[in-house]
Length: 306
Image 1 (cartoon, helix red, strand yellow):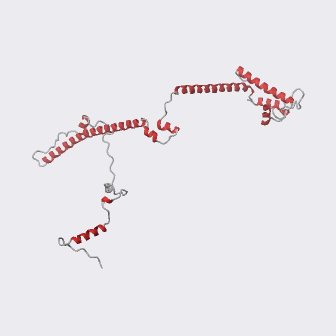
Image 2 (spheres, one colour; image 1 turned 60 degrees about the vertical axis):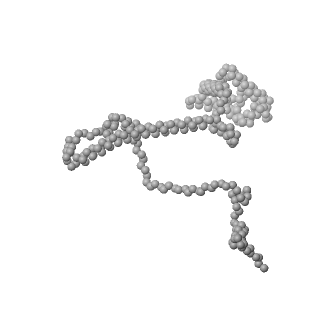
Image 3 (cartoon, rainbow, N blue to C red; image 1 turned 60 degrees about the horizontal axis):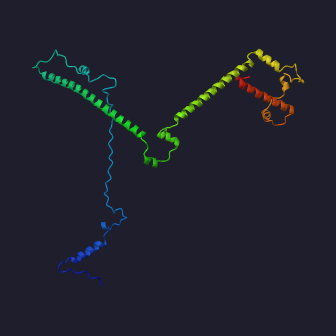
């Protein structure tokens, strides 16, 4: 048996229908009321939202504007002086053939004269006003430039803030000089004096070495071969055939009697006293080394090459 609907009461014939309609509305509602929004919802807090503005683009202007003319170029005359204004806006001379007052063209001539006077007055006033505007603009530009330069110098020379120093990335020591400048050095004068003394010592050593080289060149200049006669004499002395064999007294002046020249290994063995060396040759080598040492000591004592 189907359920029985509520009958309307005698007082309000539509009371039952209102209860059914109110029940159906609560049952099929789509969204929860504002009081039932959970805290995790983005709509829990009422935030006003602004409409996204439209980006209107400006219409392109066709053509090219002419470059403004320089009215007061650099190095030009003062165009606001009385002499320049009197020369530029000269008053009209006396007209010889002026029209009579009762002629039909008298009004036109008078109107043209008034217009000419108005143009002269406007030219004088415009030159003065433009000169004033130019000077005012130049003062403003100079003041703005000076302020920006002073502000830039103040900001560039200001010390680093503590928060920036604590939160900035690590900077290598080589880059700190570029960013923050060279730090003051308390020992600068002492280091400068030490460097000057070191440079002076090196310069004196270089000068002494050059003087010694010049002295050696002067001493050895007596053995230089400067002509064909000297060359022929040296060749005949070294390659002469008079003493072809060595004697018990001397080896001989012939270069072929001295054998092969010494190699690098022979020179090292001679200095280090290594290798197979005969007793006589060892004594002779020791005698040669001693003579070389004595010669160097004598050169140091006398201050010259021997």
